[in-house]
Image 1 (spheres, rainbow, N blue to C red):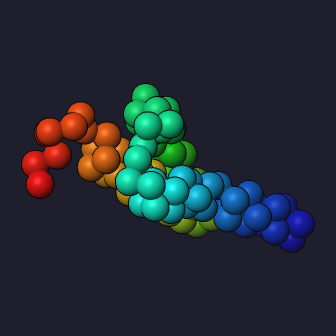
Image 2 (cartoon, helix red, strand yellow):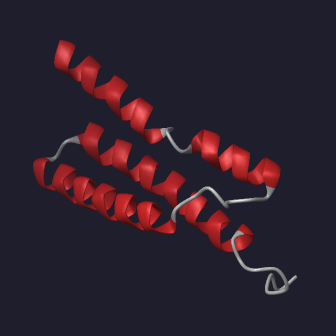
Image 3 (spheres, rainbow, N blue to C red):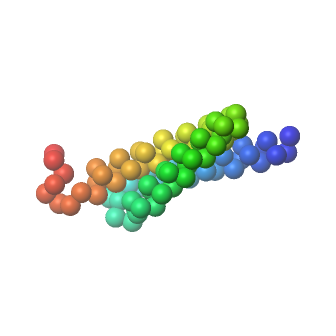
Length: 91
């Protein structure tokens, strides 16, 4: 039981770790401090963790990494939306 609680707590912290960066990027309309390499590397790792969770039928690992992948995808979208050089925004 204690390991399930620890797993859920770890998953919750991981799932929402990028939410503050998302809010900051939305507020400032800037992603100048965001590394795209880090985002793509972490997304790849999270995807592999999700595959691992599926192979082990571990719902905590699957759900946590799915939510984390969604938050990372939002941040990647914002990176491309706000990270384009001036004059190339398309809007």
